[in-house]
Length: 254
Image (cartoon, rainbow, N blue to C red; front, side, top):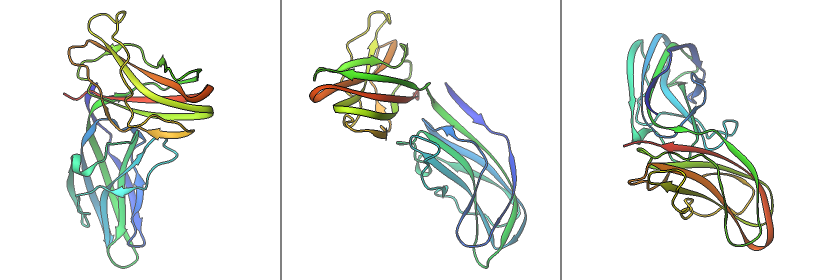
């Protein structure tokens, strides 16, 4: 669904004691697929000392308990005085590729001295042209180099669907395995689909662990329906098996 989400204004009394940013997270973790623009209001009051306040952002590729390092939003100059400010970012300031989740907040530091304080009100909104699908999990096996494909979604409308992103976790692998993400379409009836296409990942996965595909293009021209699946095959020896969990996100931008 293509929507603009406006989050409630959140207030925090923030302080810093060095020139290293201290982060206050003012939203929960949110699906990050297809967020290309963020706008926020940043209101400062009762600023004291050498405080500097900027909007902050943090990403997680696959799991929110294993995020990347946080940072102040790029391209925005930290503010240091009582006033109301507008924060507007676009592609240059955010990084949608290869991240499942994002959260927003403020970063506070001292520009000089050892103490800075401010009362901060922060309210973000963002445009999201995509959505995250429910997780799929299963135990899959293969007995030859011929791929076995297991659907992981139902047939869904392909309208405006241009890209897909997959967070894939492989565990308890045995044998020499090859795992890929695949898609198939249907022109009119989901009961009469086209053949499964070739792998969508940059390279098939062969080992236990977590990976994020980043956004991968999907061709759905003149097709009403699209479905995604997991392909598994042996690269040598038989049989192979693995526990696989997949979280798919789809971009529906025009």
